[in-house]
Every structure is written in C-alpha cells, then in structure tokens.
Amino acid sequence: MESTISTVKQPEEINKENLDEILDIQYKKIIKFDISGEKFECTEETLIPVKNTLLGRVLYEDPILHKDAKGYFFFDRNGKYFSYLLDFLRTKTKSWPDGAEYDKKVKQELEFFGIPMNLFGELK
Image (cartoon, rainbow, N blue to C red; front, side):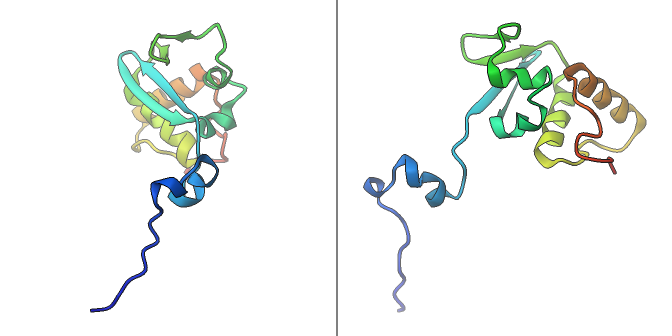
C-alpha cells in the first residue's frame, strides 16, 4: 500500500491570516437581502461595481434603507427577477432566460436599483 502525504491543516494551524490560503476563498462580508419575503445573500465584492447605485448603498448601510433586526435589507421588489440581477452582478453576463418578457422585467429591476444594463459591456 502506498503512503500519502496529508496536506490537511490542524485546527491550531488555522488563523484568520492564513484562512484565505487554506480554504482558497476570500474572507468577505456577507450582505443579506429580504426581497418581499425571499431571502438572498451575496458578498460585498458582488456589489462593488454598483457602489454608487441604490443597491450599492447597502455597502454603506445608508440610513435611508430599511435594515431589520436580523441584518436583512428590505426591498419591496420581485425576488425572481432580483435573483437574476444578483447573478448578473456575480457573473458579469446575462443570467436570465431569453425572451422579451424576461428582458423587460430584469431591465425594470436594474432601472429601479440604478444599475445600467451595459454595466459590463453589451449583453449577449
């Protein structure tokens, strides 16, 4: 039987400074949304490109926005289309199904939050 070398770190070897390297992820602040009862989360990094929009105001915890006791920012919008908006910000590409109705609804959400549809260039 061949022996293998373990690269698993012991808990005492893990600290905040080397956590990114160990887990190969970045330590990020999580932003929580309540969109008419549907819960969403993303990292603050997802919102950096839209920091000067209504949606980006959550990064600064703008007092004009409603944040509940559990830390969720509430927006009275359609969660289905908000999910496409978040995916658009995450992937920097069109993330919703083809069709005029989807394009219209997602565009309405982008406009509500002040996000230009061509934020990442022409959509394909």
